Image 1: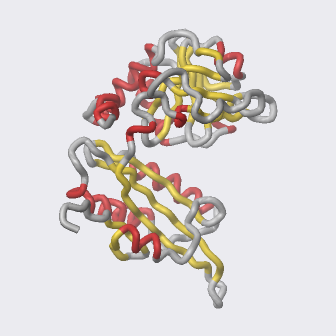
Image 2 (image 1 turned 90 degrees about the vertical axis):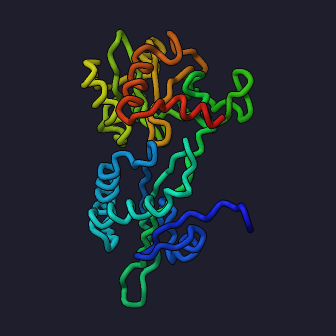
Image 3 (image 1 turned 90 degrees about the horizontal axis):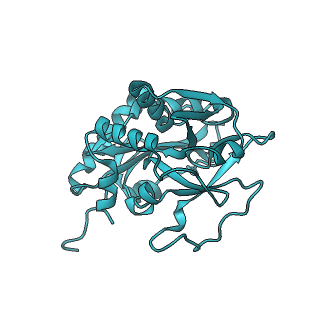
Length: 287
């Protein structure tokens, strides 16, 4: 139809296809939960961020699962850049891509070899589900001790349900990470990092630590309880799509200090400088 947005292109097992055809052509599950492994990155001004680090994490998982995708990490990197390049003309000013690699595994063939599909795709990043959280913060709860806030309940107008995050704890009650995000808090100008041996270190978390080191912000890694967070000067989560978002409450208790905290604001500003654009303003512009 005239005036319609062209469908984004995707990679499937060596071919560039319209996204819908590539997804339909997958022979395996590819869900990332029992059916394969995946990773995802985002772009800044159309340039993919830390692709190699994300792919190294993906390939570490593939090696641990004894899955060979049929592509070396260099070939996966080249294919990803090809997909991005094929879709750049569809990217509107101010928009960004989420870029994903899926290595799907399915039932074995008659010769015993597993069915493996490699899908690489782009999707336009939806800023609307986190843009406001840069200023309002996100709500964090520990499921073992607190019921999740009811869906639809907000602290005021224009606060989405997507600002609710579960914070995991280990068997001894020490905090570890949020679902789909890493968690850190700030005390006396120092970043308090939960013990990484009990969490999956994210690329965004590593980026925060790199920025902190460059800025001279000290980092203390250790075992912390929710009571430590209640006494914090600030807290935040980190993840691929949004970089880092301040935390406003934990288990319904307001995190002391401003939202975002001074340290969180400095980190956000440093991230913006690193990628050459104001990540908060870019997100807010999409509202």
